[in-house]
Image 1 (cartoon, rainbow, N blue to C red):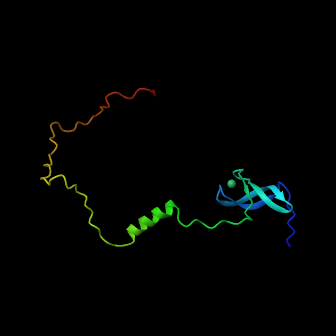
Image 2 (image 1 turned 180 degrees about the vertical axis):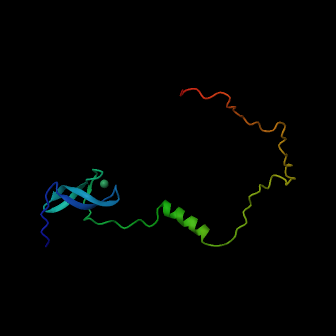
Image 3 (image 1 turned 30 degrees about the vertical axis):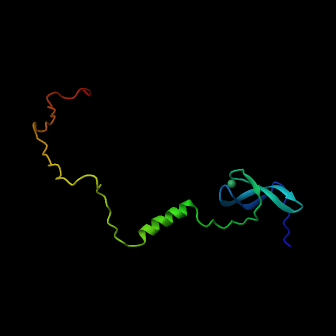
Length: 121
Ligand SMILES: [Zn+2]
């Protein structure tokens, strides 16, 4: 028999369902010498004592399902032809690429250093 002389307010490790971690807790309530409720010292949530046991992970949350879907798409190396082109639009000759008429050549701003910059001296 482990002599666990716990008292109210004592520090105890437990799994916090909110933090989802094994964290320090304070004993909040006891029945006899059994801890019933603890308060997470990180998020201050009171919850029943879980004997410091991390609960088994749920089978598959929505995220896992999504990941499975992605993996299912990735896993088979089937090169699926992607129908990117919309069927409603008839295939026309692509718009002739117009050369941008260079009416005026680029003008470069030049600063003539005729005057020395103001300021120092
Ligand atoms: Zn917590």
